[in-house]
Structure formats: C-alpha cells, structure tokens
Length: 269
Image 1 (cartoon, rainbow, N blue to C red):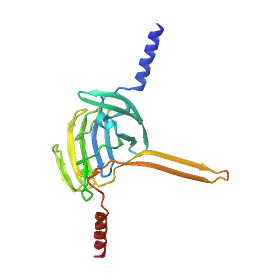
Image 2: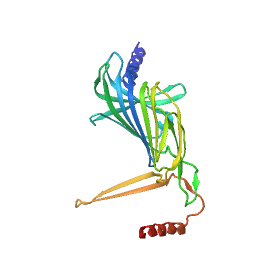
Image 3: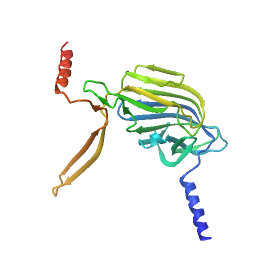
Image 4: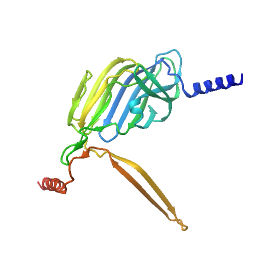
C-alpha cells in the first residue's frame, strides 16, 4: 500500500511538471524571421494565438526539433506589450519520425475561449551553419550551409505563416524551394502557407556566403582582485577556437598587403 501511495504521488508530480498541450489552441498567424547574417541563427516568431476550443488556458507550447535543440543557446518570450513571459523546458516527445522538446510559455493571463493574443518568441542557436567547402584559400570567400524547416514546427495547427530568411550577403549558391518562394538580394521569403497541420515538416536547405568570424570560446576565466585599500582589478582570459572554414595552404602576409593597398587606392579616388 505504501509503495502504491508513493507511485501515485510520483505520477501526480509528473503531471504537474509536464503539462499536456491543449488542442484547442491554433496559430492564427505566424511571421517568422530567420537571421543568418552572423555566426548565430536568430529565430524570431511573431505569433497570433487563437483559442478555438471550449475552455480557457494560460499555457502555450513551443516545439524545438531535436537537431536544433542541442544547439539552442537562448529562448525567451514576450507578450504584445513587451513584458517578459516565463519559459520553462518541459518534455521531450516524438511525433512520427520527429523528436522534439517542448517549452512551456506561461501567458500573463488566461486566454478565454474564442479569444486571441499575440506573443513573440526569440530563439538563438549556435553551430548550425556549416562551412562548405570545409577548407578555403586565403583569398576565397567563405560559403556555409544551413538546414531547417520551411514550416514553423509547432504542436498546433497554423492557419497562416510566412518565413523571411536574412543572409549575410546576396551571394546565394542555392536554396530549396517550397512554393511560393522568392529571393531578392540577401533575403529569401517562404510563403505565405495556409492551414499547415501540427508538426509539419519540409526540409529547408541553404548554401550562401557568410564571411563573418565563426569563433567559439572554449574556456573563459575571470579573476577579480580586491585590495585591502578597496581597489578592484578585473582580468578576463579567453581561449578561442576558429570554427569557420579551415585555411587551405599557408597564410600569406603578401595577400593581406595587396588587399590593404587596394583599399587605400579606392579611398584616394
């Protein structure tokens, strides 16, 4: 009997920790921006949530696919007034062949049946842009690839959605297409798409120029020294690793001088 009580308490605690996704919600409209102009990927979701169900709810769930979850650095949410919303990592689930992690967003007030509200969800990912080719000459441009989803991966049906991808330059070697798709300068637009089911997937593949530095701090050490006279000295040490395309051949100072001389000539014109 004692073991049964403990089991029931454990199940109850799990129920409190991992809530169920309320099926009455739907994404009425989503505008997603993927900023790939630096070494990071910043995903911004402007979401209009509609409660099409029969009961109120104060929880909204964000799903992050498994291949992105391990690279997630920051996730935060705000309501339409700009006030921060609490975001809590919830459960890891599977839908078909897709594994994902749920993050619970606590709304500032319960969303009544048939009502709508707007939130913004920002997620930042690291190490999801891959140099291709992996090695380049000193005078060559750095090209990278990115793989994602043409659709917003969500546990809710999405009535209307558009994705805008911002790249570091207008040099685009190739990009996947999911009609309607358009490209102009350093921007690719996917959508609008209508009535996409929950957990919809269509692989996005991009190959483009990104000459930004790809640096990783493998070690950070901060020392704070306070003297007996009240003086404070702060010293920070970093160990950095280059995660961009590797250098093919030897480093040439002559090539650097050529570039500097060319720039000086341009400034003199």
